[in-house]
Image (cartoon, rainbow, N blue to C red):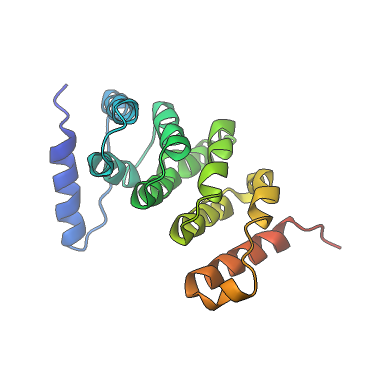
Length: 181
C-alpha cells in the first residue's frame, strides 16, 4: 500500500490554505492503516504534535471505519493536552457521529463513556468542545446528563465569555432533556 500520512496531511493543508474544503476519500486498507498509526502514537504516548496529521485527515474524511473508534476513545480517555483533546473531539464528528448517523447506528458506548473524561477537564475550551459533541449526539446525549449538568458554571464564572458559552450550551441541553409537558 502506498499511503503516506504526511503527504495526505500536506495536501489537506494546501486545500485548506486555498480556502477549499478537503474531502478525503480513503480506501478501507488506508483507513485501517490510519487507525493503526493512531493507536501506535497512543501506545508510545507520543508528543501531541505527532497526532496532528492523523487528526487533520480524520477530520476531513468522507467516510469512516470502525477501526478508528478505539484510538479516538483511547486519546480522549488517556490524554490531557488541550489542543490534542480539542482536535480529537473535532475529528469525532466525522469519525463517529456522522458515520453512525449515515449508517443509522447507535453511537458506540465506549465513545459515550470516553466523553466523561474531557467533560471534567479544567480547560474551558475542552469543556465547550465536549458539550458541542454531546449536543450532536442527539437523544443519546442524555447518557451524559448528570455529568453535563454538574459542569454548569457558577454566577461569577459567567463573566468569562467562554464560561458564558458553556452556560448557554448546558442550558440548551438541559431544556432538551427535561420532560415536555
